[in-house]
Image (cartoon, helix red, strand yellow):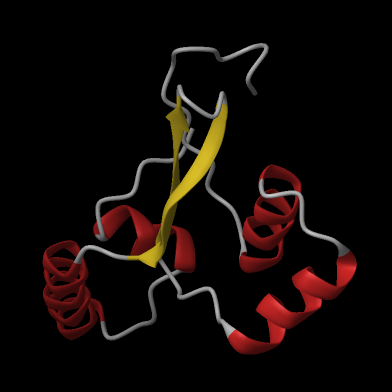
Length: 105
């Protein structure tokens, strides 16, 4: 990413295992550190993990981990409840994420 997307913002939409693999690579964890974090800290559904470039260190550093927008979550919950009442059926995960305000690229 640092070679191909230098000075650009990048959005990666993925499941928890991939979030942890990215963290392992970017933060240079060994297997022991990876397994410890995997056991102790869950990646929350619809959450965001962000890195920022630190020019002094010359690398990406963790800005926040498993943060989510409560406002978007509440909006999505209200919208899903209304849709279920109207249609009386379940909503797919992809549709639920779009209703929470997430963009797929």
